[in-house]
Length: 114
Image (cartoon, rainbow, N blue to C red; front, side, top):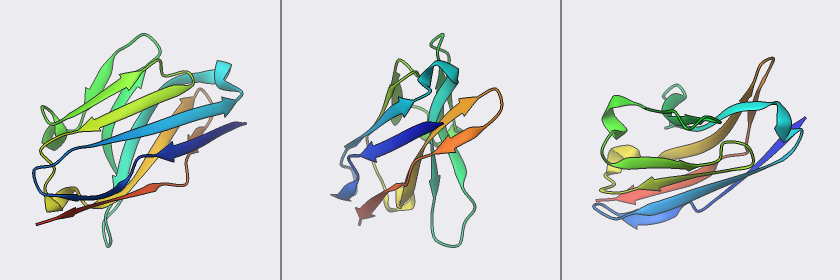
């Protein structure tokens, strides 16, 4: 079992920045990658960015250049979000991927006002 705890969400004006944090605990030895996904009301959950334990990063196209994922992908991952716009408003979820299972955090709300 892996437990994930996110922090850092909140309300920010358009053009502003936020930094999300995710801390993993439990069977972290089984984690192959960590990442962030988001879900806006009425939408499906979508990829934001992922990072593997070897440091490979993957970003959704609309986030590339604005968002940066960092961390060791074993017990900590961060998401630096710059140039936020109202379309970025969503619940952001931390994900930890193992060979057999995906673990999810409880989510943290990010609201961008225009």
